[in-house]
Length: 491
Image (cartoon, rainbow, N blue to C red; front, side, top):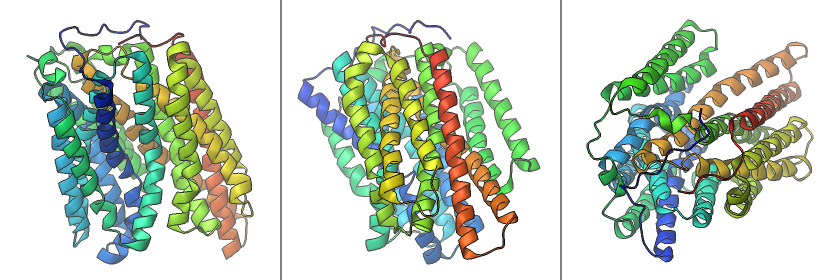
């Protein structure tokens, strides 16, 4: 990696407009991002109710989540490049319309495979929507001070949206029905599309700056299959084990496809992912930090949800409420502290501090026992964790698109979402396996009883928290080594 950033292309000026208009544009883009992030957790809350209503098996249940992940993870780079080539505003509107339509079909599902198909289509349009929104933000806010504030708000939604999804999913499932966890996307998409149609400029910088660029078909195929295979391989490892022959074969083939993708991108005239995007030390370090945060953050949302509901007896709605302190800490750091500090000190001290805080929060959760309380044990950990994640996401979302060429903004934005997606999938498989092994080991030396089963579940949860803390510590070391000193370059 090189320490110098790519020069900003002068052929594609940033979006102009009065500050009030830009901030309304931010509201539209943040709303679109919120819809995509919500779906990562809101459907998980509704899944037990959906399974009961539609009568599908536990084996088929995983496909409701996996279908979305495969389409979303596999098509993100293509979605980002299309935003660069076709136009960000156009692709954003297409993504909103498609996502809303698929959500409506999913909510009306009469069987498992109708629901799975709708989720796959959701993921495909989400892969268009997410990078379009972030790349539009990138080319809209170029003043360092405004950019810091805008990215702080946007990243707080991207990081805290999963917790908001838990709250909203519990509320809708408890008082309406599981279908509304999908229907809720329709009014959000309508409001965001109306705002985008009115506020976002019709003359899109992406169209001018990417003129003459052709779509890299070989890159699309190898990246799409490689990323989708990697996500599915991690999902298969969660259910079948890491030593399962199909799991190993899928992971090996996926890695080979991604290696082939890199080799293609180094030689092709119009690469899907120009290597200059990732070989810059600032951007590369930000992508790595986001991916590792996705692995570690998963432990909080999944295993703490289990702990709150199974051990402390929280309802789904109360579980969502319990995560609000994490969201509060995340918003304070990403939307208030990072915009003030990032232009002065740069990303490295902020990201490393955030990773150390996140590790400290997880170490507090590692000490949980069956008799621990929410206010005395869980709450302090969530506050510390939220502050740490706010520093990470607030700094990395800004840094991952800093100094980027206008014509590369879409694919650079897609890499941010790809890091989160692949990191979350790896975290799901890795930490679930570790938790299950720890729980089985605990039970193997004890007489089976309800109390022992509950204690075994807590033993599995806390082991996952410990490993996740270690991941954040490794991430801190990597950030010290990769991220350079000093502020990000001015756009």
